[in-house]
Amino acid sequence: MAVSRREAITGALAAPLLATSRQAIAQTKLKPTGQETLGPFYPVRAPTSHDTDLTHYPSRKGGRALGQVIQLTGRVLDTSGRPLPRAALTVWQANAAGRYTNPVDSNPAPLDPNFLGVVSFTVAADGSYRLRTVKPGAYPEPSGTMRTPHIHFDVVNADYRLVTQMYFPGETLNAHDILLSTLAARRRDPGASICKPTTTSEPGLLAFTFDIVMLT
Image (cartoon, rainbow, N blue to C red; front, side, top):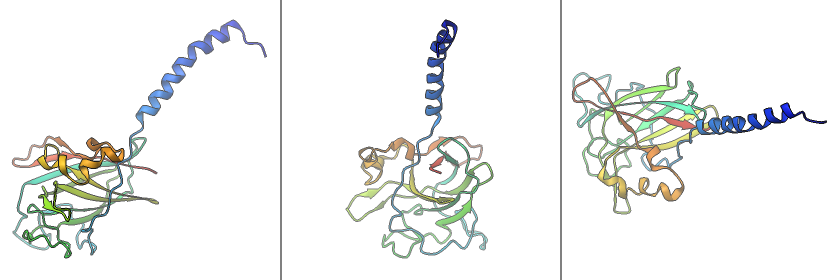
């Protein structure tokens, strides 16, 4: 079928616009958060509380966990940037001295009787979450190096599961951490695993944000 000059011109003009549109759509795709190991200190028991404030035991009055209190917020999203409101998270970490509540942790650093150490919960309808915890301490690992401060996430949405670790900006040990320092060699973006500082009006509190992107 013959194509008129007007149709040819229109098509020629539309082609770059269509290409630009497709490129824009492609650029809006988020990179999935990288998969990591569960590690040796994955919680052996389900949390007895779903309280997202890990700095105290809800059933106990008084005591608070030692260390720098931090607020961590973020969202669980798919690669198109849409929230995943049914995502369930388990979060665990070392205390401020670098010790996990897991009984297999042989680190001689002291346990903190007021630190929960692990929590499970479901995100809000907009995919967001909010945690209050303490900044975890560094600790020695079997190869003889030190693990930089980090927090573990186990995220489940529908049939998909993501296990990852989040790191803090500006840590001296980041450059030598056995996992974080090897992300680039494993074709991952190290910057995507580091939380970002954010503002808070609460005195003495450090605030960070960390979004998690899942395949669906």
